Image (cartoon, rainbow, N blue to C red; front, side):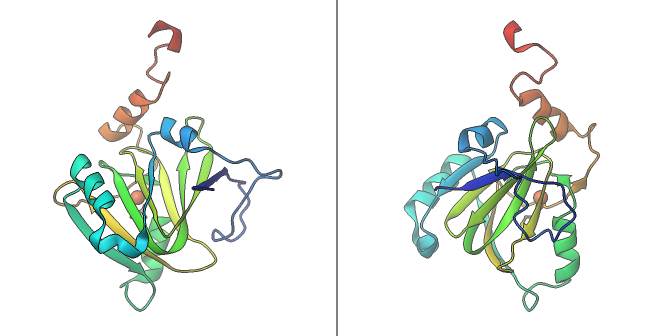
Length: 187
Ligand SMILES: CSCCC(=O)C(=O)O
Ligand SMILES: [Fe+2]
């Protein structure tokens, strides 16, 4: 299995649990691509010297890079940051994260506002489009090391939901297939 993603149940149990529906309902990479979510599988041991990663960065203009080691010893205001990560939000730009160690869940809303949980592990590079509602949580392994990429000077500002009038949100909705206010048949 390349990358596992599934529709979430809405129970109030621990956010670090998988939250599968019963029966499980998986989501394919194609379904994620329709939402504008991109994915690559790379060799995380080679991240400092990886031609494939270099090619992606060049092709997409990802000039900025830093590392985020998500553990209480290395992150100031750890608990508060985790809380903010799990508050539903959008950004004006892509969110690009490459998992180098550990694992975690990116939750994204689909076109009908259902949560899809994406399980990222070492080697997974994921791009969330600007304007998509999302959130992040650690899983029960409680640890992740991420590479953050960005086009130019990074802006990490999160705009919490609702953001229906935010330009990035409007653009995102416009770009969803058949969601531009025009019936699909009319294209
Ligand atoms: C821990 S990286 C993912 C959290 C997030 O959505 C963000 O930083 O905006
Ligand atoms: Fe985010």
